[in-house]
View 1 (cartoon, helix red, strand yellow):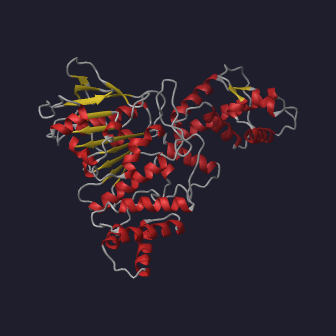
View 2: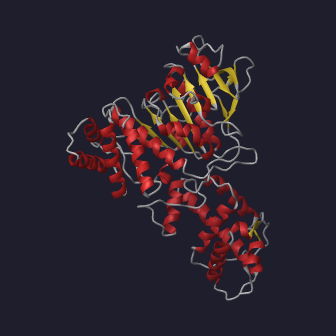
Length: 511
C-alpha cells in the first residue's frame, strides 16, 4: 500500500456540500459540538453496510475540510480507521487521492443512511442510539451503552450558543415596558433559577414559560418533580402546548409505576466507590421521618448498603433490606424504625433498573409525587434521583464552551413546590446547585416564599443566576436578603414579580 499514516494525518478530507449541511444538522440533533463527530459516525455507519460504496458520477460542490488527524485521530486510532477503510475497499493498493475519494463517499452514504434512520426513529435520540447499537451488535441491556459524541457519559451537550430566556409569558419591565431576557448559560453566570410566590401567584406560569423557551432553542432533556400532579398538562394562561408535550416527557407516578432507572448504579466499582455509594444511600435514608437513625442504626444501614452494592448488580432496594435484616440478626439487635421504614419502602417497587443513568438522563421525565403518595416514598424518590443525577452529571467532563462563552447544556432539573424538600439540606441538591454549572446542568426551584430557603446554607441562593419573587407574605428580612432593600412582596399586582439577575433587581410583568 503506497500510503503512510503521516500522509493520512495531514490530508484534507471532505464530502459534498449538501452532505456537509446534513453533517451540521446531525450536530444539532445529537448535541455534538465538533464536526468530526457526526462524520465519524457516518463513515462507520457506511462501513457497516455490505454493498460497496459508489463514488458520485457527477462533480458535486464540495463541503468544508477536516484534517485527517482531526477526523480519525492519531496513532492506533488512525491506523484502525485506515485498515477498516482499505479492507472494505478490497483493493490491494490505494494512494492518498483514492483514500480521500473513498472517505468522502462513505461519509456521504453514511449520512444519508443515518438521516433515514433518524426519521424512522421518530427523531427520538434514545430510539436512534439504541438502533445504532443494534446495528453495531453492541449490548443494549445489562450494562451502559456508550456512544461517541452522544450526550451522556462522553460529555457532549444538547445546546450550542447562548440561550436567552424571556421572563414569563409577557416578560416586560413594568417601568420601561421593554422585553426582559435572561442569559441562562451566558459567560460567567449561573444557570440556576429560584422562583417564589404564594399559592395562585403565577410562579408555575413563569417557570413553564421559561422552560418552553429553553426547549424551543435547544433539545435539552428535562427531569421535573411534580408534587401537585398537574405539571405535565400545564398549559399556562394563554393555552400554550402542555409542558410535558413540549419536552416529549414520559410521566411516571411511583409507586404505581416504578421509575426505570438503575438508581443505585456504582460510578466506581472498587471498595472506595462502594463505600461512597453506601454513605450516600445512608444519607438519603436518614432523611425519612420514620427512620430517626442513631449512631448504631447508621452503622447498620451503611454496612447493609455496602454488602448489597458489592454483591448485587444491579442492586435494588430489597437487596439492601435483606442485608439490613441480616446485619440486625448478626448483631442480635431488635428490629426498629430503620427496619420498618425499609420494609415500607420495599412494599412497592419505586425503581426498576432498566436503564443506566447515562441512558435515563438523556430523556425527559416528569415524576408525579402528589400528596396521596406516602411521604417516605416521596422523600426517598427525590433523594435517590437527585443523588443519581448528581453522581452522573458531576462525573462527566466539563461541558464545552462556545466562542461566545456560553456553556453547553446537558439537562434541566425542575422541582415544583420545592418547599416540600427545602430546609432538609439534601447534599445532592446542594452539590447540583454549586457544581453542575460547569457540567451543563441547570436547576430550577419553584417554591412559596424566600423563607423556604432559610434552612439552606447562606450561599444557596447566591448560586442562583436568576431569582424571581411574586406576591407573598415572606418576612421582610428574608425578602431583602434575596432581592435587596426596597423589594416589597406584599403589594405586587397580579402577574408582577421582582427579579434579580446580573446584580440588578427589576419589577416585571411576567404574565
